[in-house]
Image (cartoon, rainbow, N blue to C red; front, side, top):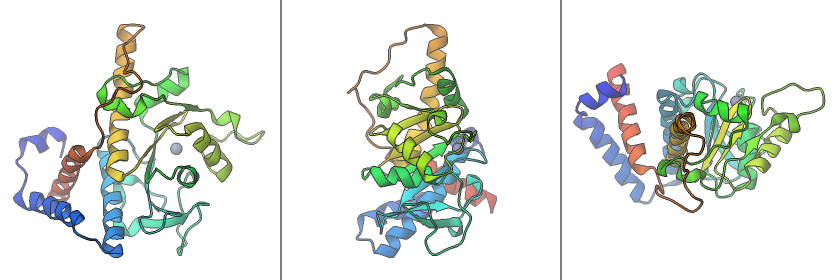
Length: 267
Ligand SMILES: [Zn+2]
């Protein structure tokens, strides 16, 4: 179901009730098991949403810090994001090693482990190869906030050049070991986004809805900046400190409803 069809179809009452029940539940005191289960569910939804909006394809991934243990994170086994179910989500430690399972992880899980290690403010991470982002690394054009939805980039977007960090003789483009992950975390520093030359981007946030929202608007901002640069050499960007959106609760509610609606249709 595409977006237009979705918007032209009134949402089923059951889907709305389901979202409301979920929202209300988050205000009640949650048990640890409920909190963990909600995070896993949100991670599954986030995988599907990122695919629906062409932020990831068969590749790319999203993780969440374990809400019950800050020294672990949740990430699915190595597979396409659109196909992830809750049974595919597993726990990994801060060295990128599996915790109580033997599943094959993403080669690039060290992006997640090394950033979580040094960024206590970060609870969710997306790594993507979104096409509109690639030209910025390829041309060393700094990505800048074009409009208020790019609020999370006003402090700059650093660029990760893997050639500066991989072993001599290595031609890898993948963040496939802790050393390369630590170098990426260092380049990211306290920023929200880093562009990875010849590869994609990494985006961080305090929550799953926020990292999905920021990833969505990273894609939009990248396309919009290219349009602006085609029209004129000196577009007016947002200034450091200018701000607008603080969270993505409204987007998240919309995207979750779309996701639930399409799941019902698929049954
Ligand atoms: Zn990658």
